[in-house]
Image (cartoon, rainbow, N blue to C red; front, side, top):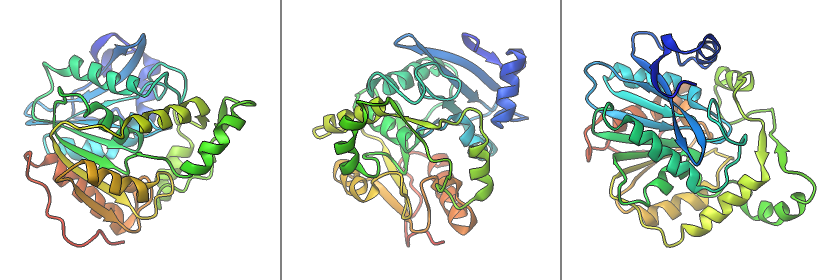
Length: 309
């Protein structure tokens, strides 16, 4: 990865091939690729800035994933004349760091801050942030700081606690005596869109192990959030009713009690990758996604009945 920002046409051939395989080499846009450094780790940054962009959306992916999962959403935002910035979290995608692990949860928020600093002079404001799963938790951690720069924040199936919280808490100390990682189930069920799941299953940068150290760090982070307060922003939560990856039945009330004024929208038939769902559910979620992120601050989409299937 080049230091600083460099157009895709100037980066090495191997990286071009990686970008193509991730569907991030989007035509008709100025795509910059570069790095920012946090705690000695270089994190990969992608940015697409249309010449007449009126705002910028920052995107944070979930655990195992990388910026490539945002490709169709990047295209839609660009079509609305919105600039887009996506980063690979430490240990993911093209970023450095131990695979699927981090020394402490705060590294993620500091990495996001480093990305913000690198784009401060070129990304048009206002800024908004969308985080999926782990990315939603990173958004919450970043929002604990008074310098939170985002006018709007969208949490997609945010990870407050992961599924199986109680039994994994009992199992981790024992399992950690024998291994450092757990193999991820290759039979993916996080979306009803079979083409999306096929793409994930063949993605060379997708993660296929779960770090036990990372599971411990999530629990430590969650414990630190009991007394947390968050910077003011327009909050919106989108959650799938068939999500088996995060403990949303705990997380949704937890978020509502701590984010006054936040709007929450349930998609009853959506799974964990609800913005990458198929059928009418996926269309409805993506419409809510686009409307919220491309509308002016403090103007949220009207919330009526839950999203249907």
